[in-house]
Image (tube, rainbow, N blue to C red):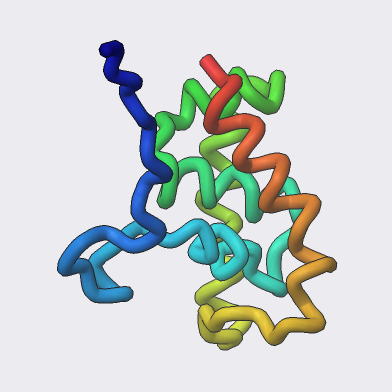
Length: 112
């Protein structure tokens, strides 16, 4: 008699986790702030969400580190000056943000 190991599907929800306590990929859509260019938004997201250093982000963008530091700094200033709050996009806005979100995911897994 042979036993067969069965791999079960991972749970869709973390046991006991409240929605605010788990990491949610939707936060990447939130980070694509409408006041920012896609490149600035991606750089800021890589810093704030993925925790990459300025040097790592510069490498991902094939840009000098000083240039990337300025881009991230200006992105923060632009958000503050815009007065537009961070909010989850409406369903019809997801498609417009998808390209930037996919680019960020690609860079997170393939950078540095």
